[in-house]
Image (cartoon, rainbow, N blue to C red; front, side, top):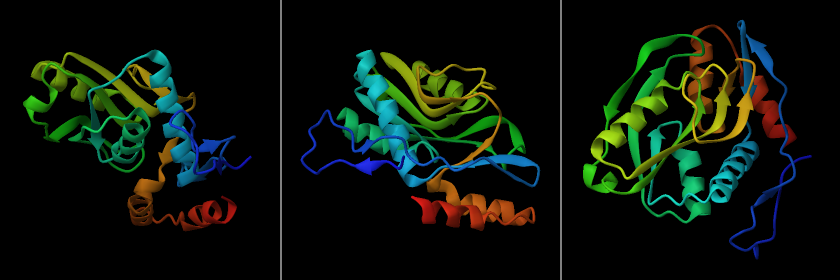
Amino acid sequence: MVARACPAVAGADTFLYTGTPLHMPIVEVGGVKVRFISWAEGIALSETLARRIQDSGFKPDVIVAVSRGGLVPARILSDVLEVDDVVTVGVKYWGLAQRRAERPVLYHGVEPGVIRDRKVLVVDEVADTGHTLMLAKNLLDLIGAAEVKTAVLHLKTTSRFAPDYYAEKIEEWIWISYPWSRYEDLREFKKRGQDVSKYVEDICQNI
């Protein structure tokens, strides 16, 4: 079932996407299994994540988005959870698919005054090895956050770090292509001689 928007009169406790959004089948591209996420699915996953955070009773004072993958989910979470204070921390880790650096690198931090003595929610799109979330959490603990919790759309079983919240667990390793990084993925796969544009077109035609 494709996710459908609720009426504009929906209250604060009503989520905009109901039902199950379209899941594109996993495909193999150049020996790498890839799952393409549509915008509708990305929003629905973010709202599922928000619901789980709400149900836990945790109310963050500030959301820290891991740039760049966590930017869109963090914006949706801030809307649903009514958290106006959203800042970013920049961490780079992945190259294309299975090619990656040995460890994540922090390339910009956050003002300590925004974090100190406040409850913080760190948001990223995926926990693959977990190193990025660990780096961000350790930084915020060091700065003096009152409490730090972490949230992702997808938790892979390869992750050595268990986030506090996730929308979906991935049992088999796959590369997840999110709609907010689609052009980056198109460029990177093209460098490897792979054209994934037909899969993106299928998403556009079927949502």
